Amino acid sequence: MLKFVGTAKRMPAKRAAEERATDFGEIYAEFDTAGAEEQAGRCSQCGVPFCQVHCPLHNNIPDWLMLTAEGRLEEAYEVASATNNFPEICGRICPQDRLCEGNCVIEKGFESVTIGSVEKYITETAFQNGWVKPVKPPRERDESIGVIGGGPAGLAAAEQLRKRGYQVHVYDRYDRMGGLLIYGIPNFKLEKDVVERRSALLADGGVVYHPNTDIGSTVTLEDLRGRHDAVLIATGVYKARDIKCPGVGLDGIYPALDYLTASNRKGLGDAVPAFDDGTLNAQGKRVVVIGGGDTAMDCVRTAVRQGAVSVTCLYRRDRANMPGSQREVANAEDEGVDFQWLSAPEAFVGDGRVDGVRCHRMRLGVPDATGRQAPQVVEDSSYTVDCDMAITALGFDPEDLPAMFGAKELEVSRWGTVRIDFRTMMTSLDGVFAAGDIVRGASLVVWAVRDGRDVADRIHDYLAAKAETASARSAA
Image 1 (cartoon, rainbow, N blue to C red):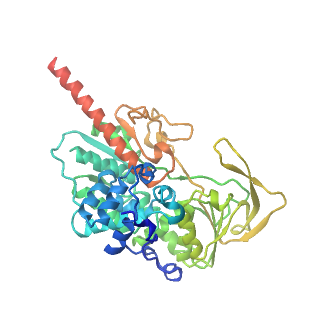
Image 2: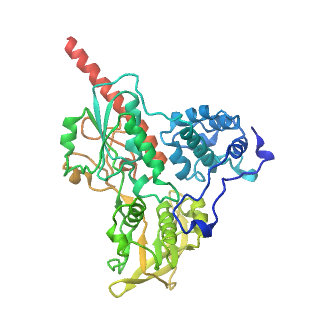
Image 3: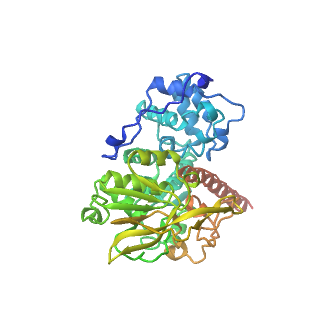
């Protein structure tokens, strides 16, 4: 260990921008054994590991880096998977530059340890060697839990509950499990067979899937409450935030998730009429993406791969203040995306169909109570960006779950997120829990995994207390 003094930081080989911009394959190769051991050996094994502190899952990162450096990969996988249900996914898509790697204590001057790439290497090696096994609980329990939502929060909770022997049923409105991991994240960041491999592993461990099940129409929430001893709501947030400016109703303006879902479904081999007829296909178009988060980065890089004539990203703050991963921004720039910082749409222009976005320049004002500078319009700074296709990536809000589920008594916050008691993670309905983005708002996959693990413990506590009460009553 402690090799950071003489060994430089190195990422796995990255395909050239000219090559990777023509397909949807992952852009980073995997470490070979020597490369992974060398980079893991750069860890300083510090007494207070900030990488672990700033990881939502509090992964034991220094420990599995040490085990990797020593060639003890099976043990490294056991440590990595002890706190993370999907290490091969988080290793690929976590914004490590903002979390573990961004808080590495050797970062200044020597550059951080390449934690995410080593995590990916460990887990892929584990799968190749057959070390990853389906869940086998020590004993089966009679109680069953219904999980609404097959995304990262729901699947993480499902696996944790299966480990305790509960009968777990996952209901999802789509035809595949994975949620945004399948339909919202492009293959160049997360190839779909990685997600399908993990969901199949959970099924092999006894988790029962119910795809194409729309809660509120296919089955009601009340039906699920009668069918299961506890219910978990882990739907995520899918409602696109609206943009309010003149011309927003013109043809050719689409929400980011509609665009990404069409692309991902096409990649999965599904029939996608809106893609085939050119509606949600960027080929040959001048594309403008509005937003600065990871979803916006997914959109601009997808448009490049679909053969857009030009791709422009408008963001109302500067580069230092954008919420997306800086690594993703750098990759997008390499692939030819034009970032126009401190720019915001003023109006969409066109005759029936958008053919331009009129923008105004912005400046950052005085920091607010959170410390973030509010963007302000610069007067007389308007200019127009030519555009055949505009994609809005301004974030996601919760859908109206009480109305969708036919459960008016399900309490929500003023933002529309499901209200829970944060000690028990239970909603206003007895035996109904909630976790993930539907509680905290749109966030990272790693936070959804953390919430799924936490709510599994709370559901177990609830069912154990319920069983103990029933036992005491029968004894009396």
